[in-house]
Length: 123
Image (cartoon, rainbow, N blue to C red; front, side, top):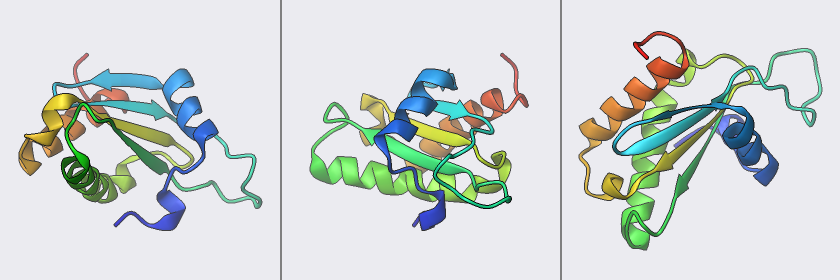
């Protein structure tokens, strides 16, 4: 499970990440990253933690399949939170093939997208 402080919950935050962030597409998913976005709702001098949200539409599959895909993606992102800059917003959008994909395939696509967005991969 993704810790509460790392969850993206508000509609405005999703919109900010998708509209103002960078995007990297892979065959199974699309990752939107808004680096270093500050959250006006958080008080204090510390940099806010990175936060992630997920979009899994009905095109991926039925309710059971969508829930399974969300759980896999949450687990994968939780393992990669340390790679993300503080205050960043990440939205992972599953594409229709994600419902049939293996866990390893999702992990590979997520890693490739994050490497591209964080500047550690070929463009």
